[in-house]
Amino acid sequence: MQYRRLTKEEFENMSEDFAIFLASNSIDKKEWDELKESDPDKVDGMLDIFSDMVFEKALTSCRYLERISETEIHTYFFTDSSAHMVTIKIKEGYTGDFIHDKLSTIFMQLLEEKGLEVYQGTKEYTKKREHEMFDIMQQGAQFSKGELYRSLLTLL
Image (cartoon, rainbow, N blue to C red; front, top):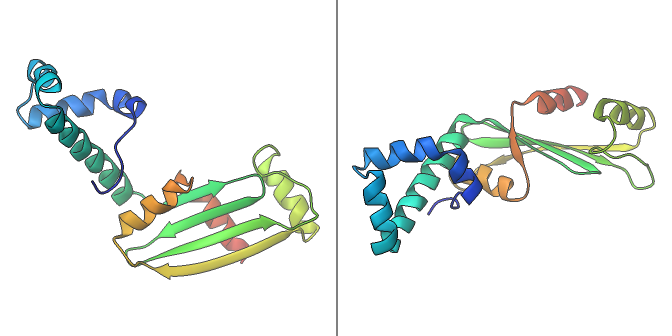
């Protein structure tokens, strides 16, 4: 398995896609129910293959990730060969919360007070691009359209 198995909730949200996947493998509902009883290893294999396909498709089409905590914002842009990150942190001794406060208001306030630390960097991939992205997602990042990344980039 390249990524991770989808959760039960994720499978439920993709039930139509999973049914199409099974049909493309010549497995109808009756056969699937029988497989669940008679061959759990094959079922596990099918679930893993489908999960990998879903993640591969999502990660291949995505260019941006972001992770926001109370005191930090991490944004990422993924090219074909490297990832660029912009990170904003609230400096020690300053108050504010990127999650609960209105982001634009707290951001401008801290910017005026010089209460922010800004970092950026680029990393060449040491493994497949999608695997690099998945590792960052395992740390809490989520898919993004890149608006926050581009906004933070203008600060630099």
